[in-house]
Length: 102
Image (tube, rainbow, N blue to C red; front, side, top):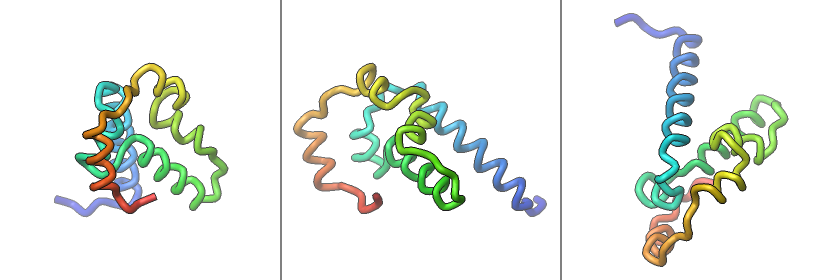
Protein backbone atom coordinates (compact mmCIF):
# COMPACT_ATOMS: atom_id res chain seq x y z
CA UNK A 1 0.00 0.00 0.00
CA UNK A 2 1.37 3.39 -0.93
CA UNK A 3 1.67 6.27 1.50
CA UNK A 4 -1.11 8.81 1.24
CA UNK A 5 -0.28 12.41 0.46
CA UNK A 6 -1.59 15.14 2.73
CA UNK A 7 -4.01 16.17 -0.03
CA UNK A 8 -5.32 12.59 -0.31
CA UNK A 9 -5.74 12.39 3.47
CA UNK A 10 -7.66 15.66 3.48
CA UNK A 11 -9.90 14.52 0.62
CA UNK A 12 -10.62 11.18 2.30
CA UNK A 13 -11.31 12.83 5.65
CA UNK A 14 -13.66 15.30 3.97
CA UNK A 15 -15.49 12.45 2.21
CA UNK A 16 -15.82 10.54 5.49
CA UNK A 17 -17.14 13.67 7.22
CA UNK A 18 -19.72 14.25 4.48
CA UNK A 19 -20.83 10.63 4.75
CA UNK A 20 -21.15 10.89 8.55
CA UNK A 21 -23.20 14.08 8.24
CA UNK A 22 -25.42 12.47 5.60
CA UNK A 23 -25.92 9.42 7.81
CA UNK A 24 -26.84 11.57 10.83
CA UNK A 25 -29.34 13.53 8.74
CA UNK A 26 -30.97 10.28 7.61
CA UNK A 27 -31.11 8.94 11.18
CA UNK A 28 -33.20 11.71 12.68
CA UNK A 29 -34.80 9.00 14.83
CA UNK A 30 -31.59 8.84 16.85
CA UNK A 31 -31.75 11.54 19.50
CA UNK A 32 -28.70 13.62 20.38
CA UNK A 33 -28.95 12.62 24.04
CA UNK A 34 -28.75 8.95 23.04
CA UNK A 35 -25.66 9.68 20.95
CA UNK A 36 -24.11 11.52 23.89
CA UNK A 37 -24.91 8.70 26.30
CA UNK A 38 -23.51 6.01 24.00
CA UNK A 39 -20.72 7.72 22.08
CA UNK A 40 -19.86 10.85 24.03
CA UNK A 41 -20.69 13.21 21.16
CA UNK A 42 -23.70 14.33 19.16
CA UNK A 43 -24.67 16.47 16.19
CA UNK A 44 -24.16 19.63 18.26
CA UNK A 45 -20.63 18.53 19.18
CA UNK A 46 -19.88 17.86 15.52
CA UNK A 47 -21.16 21.31 14.54
CA UNK A 48 -19.08 22.89 17.32
CA UNK A 49 -15.96 21.09 16.10
CA UNK A 50 -16.71 22.35 12.59
CA UNK A 51 -17.04 25.88 13.96
CA UNK A 52 -13.76 25.51 15.88
CA UNK A 53 -11.98 24.37 12.71
CA UNK A 54 -13.35 27.34 10.78
CA UNK A 55 -12.25 29.78 13.48
CA UNK A 56 -8.77 28.22 13.59
CA UNK A 57 -8.51 28.99 9.86
CA UNK A 58 -9.76 32.55 10.33
CA UNK A 59 -13.06 31.75 8.60
CA UNK A 60 -15.98 33.69 9.97
CA UNK A 61 -18.81 31.27 10.68
CA UNK A 62 -21.61 31.46 13.20
CA UNK A 63 -22.80 28.72 15.52
CA UNK A 64 -26.14 28.73 13.71
CA UNK A 65 -24.41 28.33 10.33
CA UNK A 66 -22.26 25.43 11.54
CA UNK A 67 -25.33 23.69 12.96
CA UNK A 68 -27.19 24.14 9.68
CA UNK A 69 -24.25 22.50 7.88
CA UNK A 70 -24.55 19.45 10.13
CA UNK A 71 -28.33 19.30 10.47
CA UNK A 72 -29.13 20.23 6.86
CA UNK A 73 -31.61 22.83 8.08
CA UNK A 74 -31.81 25.47 10.80
CA UNK A 75 -31.33 23.84 14.19
CA UNK A 76 -34.65 25.09 15.55
CA UNK A 77 -36.46 23.51 12.59
CA UNK A 78 -34.69 20.18 13.20
CA UNK A 79 -35.56 20.29 16.91
CA UNK A 80 -39.20 20.97 16.14
CA UNK A 81 -39.37 18.15 13.59
CA UNK A 82 -37.27 15.46 15.27
CA UNK A 83 -36.28 16.10 18.87
CA UNK A 84 -38.38 14.57 21.59
CA UNK A 85 -38.34 15.29 25.29
CA UNK A 86 -35.57 13.37 27.03
CA UNK A 87 -36.72 10.83 29.57
CA UNK A 88 -35.60 10.96 33.18
CA UNK A 89 -33.41 7.90 32.52
CA UNK A 90 -31.76 9.59 29.52
CA UNK A 91 -31.12 12.73 31.55
CA UNK A 92 -29.64 10.74 34.44
CA UNK A 93 -27.38 8.78 32.09
CA UNK A 94 -26.24 12.03 30.50
CA UNK A 95 -25.38 13.56 33.87
CA UNK A 96 -23.33 10.54 34.92
CA UNK A 97 -21.54 10.20 31.57
CA UNK A 98 -21.26 13.85 30.52
CA UNK A 99 -18.17 14.26 28.31
CA UNK A 100 -15.61 16.87 29.21
CA UNK A 101 -15.25 18.37 25.72
CA UNK A 102 -16.90 21.68 25.00
